[in-house]
Amino acid sequence: METYNQRASTSQSRRDNFQDTALGLVSTLSFPAIVGTADMMLKSAGVYLVGYEKIGGGHCTAIVRGNIADVRLAVEAGVQTAEQFGQLVSSLVIARPFPNLDIVLPIASRLSQFTGDGYSRLSNTAIGLVETRGFPALVGAADAMLKAADVQLAAYEKIGGGLCTAIIRGTVANVAVAVEAGMFEAERIGELNAVMVIPRPLDELEQTLPVASCWIEERQPLRLPVNIKEKEQVAEVEMVGLPDLAKLPVKIVEE
Image 1 (cartoon, rainbow, N blue to C red):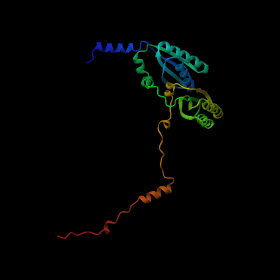
Image 2: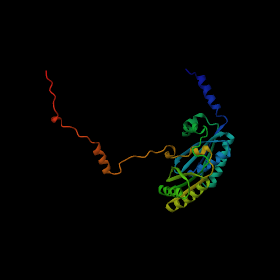
Image 3: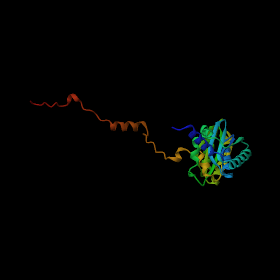
């Protein structure tokens, strides 16, 4: 059975593992802004992106981890980027966080997902994001983007407050053309809130973005009758009549 000294030694060892690390958080008021902010944080320092937290009302937070100096530099770059977008809410750097903080926060379950082999589902592409207030404007913008250039709609993200973001991928030129078309259509239908084009995103950034299930697995065609009459015809072919038991001959066994 584990003794008190062993537990204390284990706890101290876990704390030592966090002596030179830090947790950095930058919060914005739109999803495109937080993705652009996260992209700048990753490219400005040696940190890795843990993920995003969306708490409603449009509030999104990018969370990074690394050594203290890198996290401070990344958060500073993220704050400057968010201020340029006019979307900064707040920022925070926590030096040497205790392990219990990671366990309690919902980001803990995602730590292992972003420390692997850097696998990218769609590398060497650009990412475009168009955020609207209202779902009809989002659907209209997505339709306009797909028709304006050779891009693919990866997914869409909802962050509360009526804000939703269409996420497209393609070459830098195609994404730029598509986003411009999506902006005009969103403004025509409803309200455009934010846009973002990120050329050559890092693997870590791509892995944190939502991807529709159709990108991962191929849907099988659903085979149904074309109309009701066809269904009735199929049923008639499959029906088999049963014989009348009263008219069947009875075999008599002689003793």
